[in-house]
Length: 281
Image (cartoon, rainbow, N blue to C red):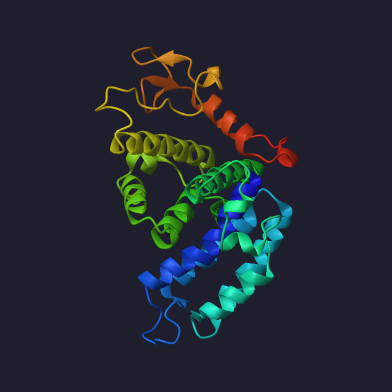
């Protein structure tokens, strides 16, 4: 999964930035219609700086930090990142094991995924889990509010989707869920990184079921909706109760989930083997 997250990131940095530039032109100059400026440039910097802190691979964090220096310099200079300069930087910089070519054609580089959407969800889950581990490490310390804010993953993901995700319908659904406080998002403290990981998991299961209904794979044909992931076979502890039984929390489908068990499962699923010792508390 780590490789798929890195491949998705490489693709997003190349293709997603073109999407953002096309939607929000940095200048009327026709010679560089895909230059990045304004809010998209600020969000690119924020996304890279966030990943340089939380991404669960030291080599990837180093590589991401090198890339982050390019848009930062552009922002301090002209305020515009020329497309050619950004492509040169991407062509010269791998992200851990993800080669620059993965940004142009990710197909040959996937390990478990087969699509960019799958890789992007993997990236999102991985960084929310990693952020939860990082936030846990400073609990009880003298860390400042700004230090804790480094692990506030959901606003970073929200703004990435708003600016850099090419599927407008997908982005709209996600932003509607986020901005309307769906699934209790507004009840989460910015320092509740565990809650953020759990919220994203609920959203992903909701998306899976909504897409199944829209494609006619369930509901109208009388077929059951897909079981929330992980199912009971993968994680029996995650689903100890049915609706109507006290305890647990309502989730997509017909079951109640145990938040602690789900977060522990997410940690096992999305923490790279080299970092598996990290606890979520």
